[in-house]
Length: 115
Image 1: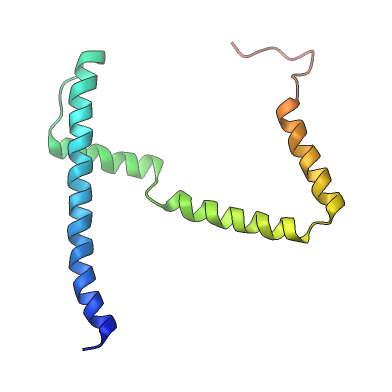
Image 2: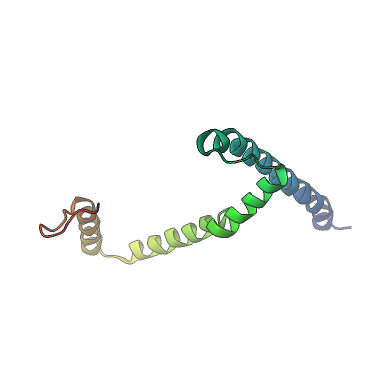
């Protein structure tokens, strides 16, 4: 048996157990926080462990997370770094000035503040 195969045989069950432990801890934390906060704040009823797991799954579906943003963020940073390297010093300064202006912009005089 090769070294790589031995490692895979050991890592696969460990990954499954680790994922199950992560889900169990996450579900318990959500349940405890929900049952501590929502009945007192909003008068909502308490939830069970399995409802907390379902709530975690729903949040994952609706809001994503768990690494998906990390990959796209690193890809975006890498692309920006490549663009930055191709810029001339004049283009870099113009870019900096453009960013600087984003934070100092004032609303046009005829605009109305949001209520």
